Each structure stands twice: as C-alpha cells, then as structure tokens.
View 1: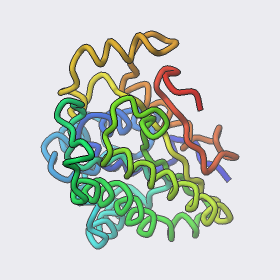
View 2: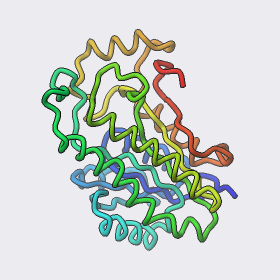
View 3: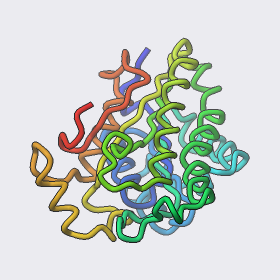
Length: 254
C-alpha cells in the first residue's frame, strides 16, 4: 500500500526553524497536511504554519516526554488526521562550532545523554505514539534525521555523533519489526547545511573546505535535504526500508 503525498498527514518534529521548517514547507508544497512540532520556537512555528496554509498547524511538545508526545499525536489526529508520516528532526540545543566542542578529555556523559534523550528517546516516543494507527491503516512512513559524521567525522562532535549512530541502529531494528505492518523506517543523513541556526556558528572557512571537498563543489541546503526526505514518504520508496540516505553533495560515498 502507498499514499500520495497530498493524501498524507505529516508530523515534523523541531519544525519551527532550520531544517525542520524546510521539511515542513516541502511537504506542504506537495499538498500534505503538516503538523509543525516545536519545543521552544512557538512563535516561529505558528508563523510557519500560518504561511503554509489551512492544511498546516503548530503543535507544542517536548519529544523527550512520552506523555506529551502521545497527547500531541492525539491532537494532530483530531485537527489534521492521524499521522501517516513522522519525520523526527528535533535536535538538542547544539551549535556546530568545532572550536567550541567538548573534546574527549572534557566530555561529560550528560552531554551525550542530552542528545540521546532528544534523538533516540524522542524517536522511540514518536514511534510508540504513532505506530498503532499506522498498523491499523496498514501504512506508515517514519523518517529519522541522521548525520554523515559517523562515516566521516571531519569534526569529531562526540556527543552528537554517538546519538545519531544509535538512532541509525534504531532505524534498522524498527524497520525489521514494523515492516510486516506496512510501515517503513528510514534515515536521511545530511552533512553541514548552509545555513541553519545550528550551523550559524560554523566558521566560513569550514563551509569552504566542505564545498571544495564535494563533487558538486557546494554545501547542501536545508531545502535540498528536505526534498530527499520527501522520497521516503512518497510512493516511489514503497519497497525501501531500513536504509540510510546520505545527502551531502557526495562528500561521503555510502
């Protein structure tokens, strides 16, 4: 079974700004109903939902809180319909600034745990809340946002990268368990994006280095990565699950 994008209800976490906002806008462009989730960026999320039209609404919830996520999914069902697609993009507070990162001799477990809570626990909360209605329908699409850094740690962000690697494992195990119910689980992994709030502190020299190292000779944009996310929700990917698609202009060959 597959559904065209314009018949889907898509919940995007961390969608008030940056990559999440680009993903929400991409789905809205294709006619989907879009739930714009936010934790702190309430005003930005409301403004985005208003700009996306009548088939979009903003929903506040901290993905680390299982009860809040369950209530959010219930609210989305009432307002827009049960989510057919979940895109987990939410990111713990973080800045991609290699000069300011915690190195191994100073790294704390709390820093790693913060990313695990948002990335991995958040994904688990979302899957547990949304999967029952997906099973009933015999259709579901779950897309998790990863990183190319666990294949090419050009800057060793230990905390962020470890959590994303764990999320890739969950992607594959969830795909194995949910596949018989018509639910696919995939990951889209970007590199450095030009530009999001998280990458705004990245030195320009790093952007130049990345651009010069890719076959396309440029840095990927949030909009380009968002289009790749659409693939995993579309009928074109109906036979694809448990996969990790690298979207970084060819910096990493997968």
